[in-house]
Image 1 (cartoon, rainbow over the protein chains, first blue to last red):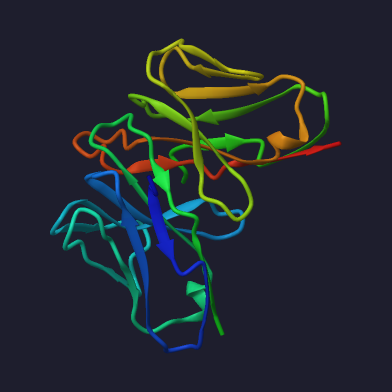
Image 2: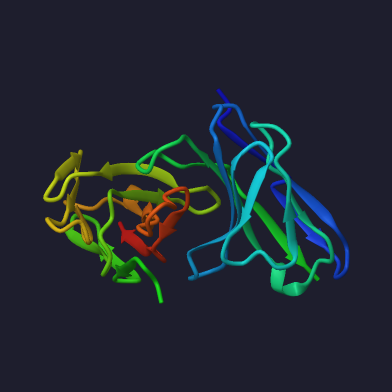
Length: 113
Length: 114
């Protein structure tokens, strides 16, 4: 049982380049999330999805896009990378309900130079 | 402003000491969760508290949910180096109709020195 799988683990981008961070979960969870974590700043929600075909903005969506074509996959797209997007990105999923556990991937450490 | 305030932000102690970290809010939460995050990893759930006044124990860790469900604490007895990490509290958005999002505190970074 793999849980939440994120790729890649590390990436260096040049300013203006684009990339997609992949996230897959095998637990049939409805809710999926993308967070960024900067040192000392906790987890900031970028986008989330409550099911296939449904996505919504979080606190810091600018510069990012997402899609949710299947229950399993929730890729995050950076179109024009900027130094401000240097961060660690985490994908998470959880089941329906308020008190359900959030399962996280191992994270992607992205540096934009 | 953070909906969930955690304190202290940093804590460095010696092995064997006891400690308590706090998670406070002015809002009522239906439940609160505590996660631990180790360097280079994603957060992992430690416990979920649901009932006001609830106390849960996980080996040397004791979690309490406030009677009014606005706060929670985590007490560690005889801390060990393996307890080192970032402790995060989280709860479903208390705003009516949107518990799909989790609200996160900024965390308490704990270092337990041998």
